[in-house]
Length: 381
Image 1 (cartoon, rainbow, N blue to C red):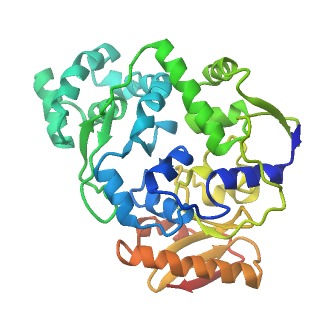
Image 2: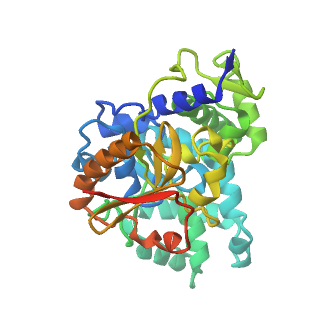
């Protein structure tokens, strides 16, 4: 079966709850979309506002404070918010990538630490973090065990590798600059190739449910797992997956029976969160992000700006400013497009007003450096 590029776009939007807001609880919604990148604490709130009908941010507050949804370093070595019941398999699937990148980082070894050192200190650290601890407390615990100071880079690598969940620290977005941690409720098996392979197979099947159809390079991009391991995981799922072909001949995989809507299904406008996974989940990002706009949305340091989605594709960027949402379109939009974006902005303004009206204000410097906008409008709250 050959599937067109536009049909792939619509499949992504349907599975990511972006063709229509779904009447789901926040935990079920996060599970449906696999996980939400949570590098910026406010982004999961904006991402769920885009996807959940009648979204109430207090529902997300409660799911996070009760550790039904958990924040930890996972896919692409970035902070993700995932369902607690998914954490163990996802973490086991990410084990080779996390271990290699954190415990074999030259900065880690130059500081006098080895992977064996980390393995030795981990049981005591996880026992100590059985109740919520601040980052400072955990770093001191490591220093006491080592009998001397521990460089900041060592603490950063250890905390990103260890199966720790970030503990919420309060409003407006549950997680603030002051970090706290707690040991994962169900510990993953670490440094075990069989457990890692099984976990990666689970993660990739879930990825296809939430983002498919997709290629092996797409799966590797989403996870940062080595392509060799991705190919092995896909092979282990042989017989459980459909095989399709993209318009350019790329081999694509999908779960049987998954939604693949017609390419002509209408796609409503959306104001996407910073680092929304939809923009980062594929090697071929043109599925949602036109190649001509990629460098304007995904900046040189990896910052992924909040984007305007029009007819299912990125058409510009937005930011909160005094009085509303400043929307900068990279191409001319129709009056109907602007009307739809204005309605979205008014709704988003209600969410931001009670939390942080300038949620992404610290990234204004990207606008100061100039963006190739065909038109910029202030969409009032």
